[in-house]
Length: 420
Image 1 (cartoon, helix red, strand yellow):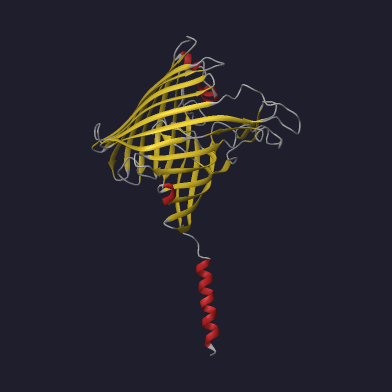
Image 2 (cartoon, rainbow, N blue to C red; image 1 turned 90 degrees about the horizontal axis):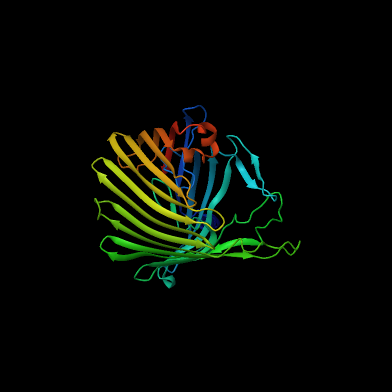
């Protein structure tokens, strides 16, 4: 009889412990960090052409970032799984102060600079349910997240990107493809002086309604994806002050992108062909992009080319053309050799002289595997860029400060990168 209370207590303790057991958590993420110098003296300088949409990445990233992601499965219900995903992140740009913002007068201000001044945020924090039979085995979600990210590789371009705060239903299997619809708002749109809590963010923000259909099987080893994203301003006069919202400066927008992927049809690699047109008021962008990967023995090759025409309502537009490639060769053990070349050309719409820049990088690396995508990797690189006089006259930031009277520049550095 004396043991009965002990048995009951142990049973209750076990039940409580089971109830309080931590949910299963998946840990993933991304990071890059490094250090570099320029040949003229001082920090690494990264090279990009004024008017171009991207720059080539290898040996040309003057920042560091870490994005650890934690995904906790909290419940199951009728075959569906329910999760919370959180991604705190830290970002530091080498060539600009942190904490920068625009005050209520329109002037640039800075809350601090220096190596220990960082931008920290929750890049993603949202809840979702997956494999919901009533949603054609799709998802429902709400919160802040990276959304609709369709990204190229060596020049790190986001052909589609609707990051922000929002909610939606995702990847509903309709047989012909998977349908996703979301309502997204930019959490930073309209933010003025952070010392003024009565800024314009509440009375002036922008929303988008991204709709996508992906996984449309159109021929063997090929898929089509269609993205349609209307957007519109949400605004009202400030009722506390009577301050009117400026009209006409925030027109409605529409973006349509069509992307064809193929696997194994060209050189045995992966192919992306994309066409996109986006319009916001009188401003328009039209682009065509082609990306191809292939493997030749121990060497992996990535190639990309793109042509984009931009027309602007209030200022001159331009035409941008880029072509570039990266070769990544496994040498033996953890060691590999990488080479990347990229050329950008921008032709102003007003008939001015063409701007052009060519960037070249050679690197040796130690990586955790034979494959080009093996991570972590640590690279020692040399990057050299050359540009014409028209591009020199449009240099900005640290590139102008270091190489302002020259038409070529070099940086040397070490970078670590990992994803998991």
